Amino acid sequence: MSYLVDTDAVVEYLKGRQPATEILTSLRREDLAISLIKYGEVYEGIYRGRNVEEHFKGFQLVLDRVRVLPLDLSIMRRFAQIRGELRFQGQLISDLDTLIAATALDHDLMLTTQNRRHFARISDLKLYPTN
Image (tube, rainbow, N blue to C red; front, top):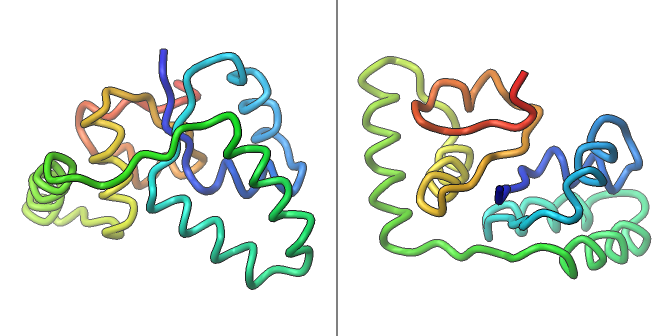
């Protein structure tokens, strides 16, 4: 199985917090990716945080083990479809989270996230952990 790692998992991992460290450690031999969106979000957090140099080095180690997936036309079309469905249902989530979901679906990846409340609104999106 291949996984798309959400920002919360990376941030919590960099801070050494459970369960993110357990989840990412258990998946270290799997095919892991992050979206270009999450790449930017993590760097934003690093640059405005207290331990910039330490977290920068930690994120570099994460980047050595994951693929960074760019946005493309296919993902943007899926984003529009998901956003339209959520709008129709009155269940919109942030555009960035919608882009993450579109990326996971477009690449057939399971999303690792602590934010199940928002992402569970998107049909066919596989979430990890599955409980």
